[in-house]
Image (tube, rainbow, N blue to C red; front, top):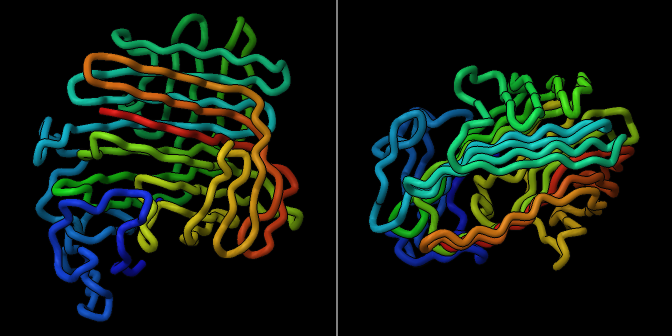
Length: 319
């Protein structure tokens, strides 16, 4: 969620990056990588943990409110995917402002239940790092979070930086109570923990899901344009039976219905339920479109999906 040395993606501004070379990054042939050395902070990073990111504040350390005039943002998002139901929950912090939201999509009943709060805390994450809980408006949910794969990504953001931890949890179990009816299902959970000093204007398009291919293998993917989308050391990932491989760049159709992979293949998203959010608070503006649904098509390597479920998302934020 490799080696370094790629130019920053054209989807992100490159202003303010201080480093060697005209591209703003050190070419890979100009240095010898030693996995015991601190990582050069003017280059994007992807690895199993943050041990090599020395000299900056990243979770679990507290991040200052500003860095180089860029406001701190952080969000912790969990999504769960199964043929029976899909759900998501998040805590979002923009400077001192905090928002929490959740949504449950029951595919069998074709019912979407959702809510957003700014004060009360209906979503709990860190009381138990291996469990996500929702308790709000008569809806209760617990999702187990036992990562089968986990990694962190980092990149410079102008004169500041952004960081994220990604975790894929195969065999996650969700216990969900809606309308007095409790269901227990097994599926795949995805954890997206982000922190840093994102640009004032931040945009991304994102697709993620999991399912089974025609050979009976468990497959999952995480594809994005924006945020951690550098040519190398990106968050883009394909998992086959839990084994990860970084993907090359992807493209989204204008309506986000189709994701095309540079290595070959494309998947089509069939939207089933929407979580639309429009925020206008002080100097913060956000247009957020998050949808639950199913996927069909072919992943890189000629992997044909038999069935798959997940999310797709568009964010356009001025924060």
